[in-house]
Every structure is written in C-alpha cells, then in structure tokens.
Image (cartoon, rainbow, N blue to C red; front, side):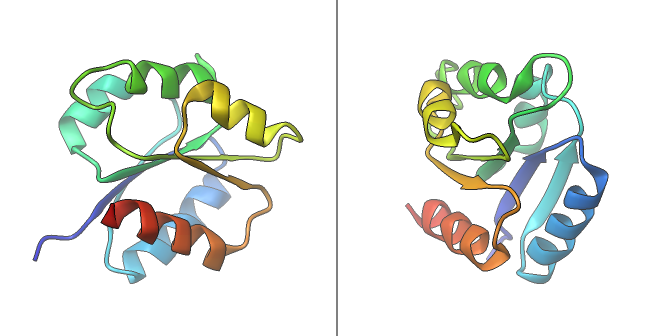
Amino acid sequence: MSKKKILIFDDDTVILEVITIIFEEGGYEVEISETSHDIIDKVSAFRPDIILMDNWIPNIGGVEATRLLKNHEEFSKIPVIYVTANNDIAALAASAKADDYVAKPFNLEDLEEKVARLVQN
C-alpha cells in the first residue's frame, strides 16, 4: 500500500517541522512549501492526497491559493484543511472553498483526525 501524501503550505518553519514529524510518524509522505503562488505546479509534481493551507503565506495568501486549486478542474477534489490563527477562520475557509479548518494554535490530535477523515473520503 502506498503512503498517503500530504502537502503543507506554511511559512512558519517551527510549525512545518512539528507537523512534518507528526505526519511522517503517522505513515504519510510529507512535502512542504513556504510559498503558495506556485500551488498548481507543486500539486502537479507531488500529487498530494490532502493539503494543509496556512492563511498568512507569502505572495498570494492561503485563500487565493486554495481558490486557484479548487478552480482547477484536475485538482479541485483534493481536500484542503485551512490552518490559521485568524478569528474569522470559518468565513475564510468558506470563502477559500476549503474542506475543513483548524485554528492555530491547534490540537494535533484534532488535526490528525481531520486529515485521516478527509483522506479516506
């Protein structure tokens, strides 16, 4: 059985390190990116099963990057979990067309459960 692939967009290197370790230990193949302007290229190359998207990410931001992905015919079905410290996270996730969201600072178990649920759909 091949590993599930998770692509993480976040410019916080500490968060990237922690999430990478957690998901690699959980059996996922992890790819990270600190920018999101080239989301379509990254998704084309890596072919993730799920994406974690930070809101405050350089160049175009999480909402715009998620919209680009969701408006792309080939990749629109890839689940995206929006991860941000913003108070309006539900509204942001909805406007981005994300599949779910987790507020920062997040509970790792909560994040892992949401990822597992969306990857199995």
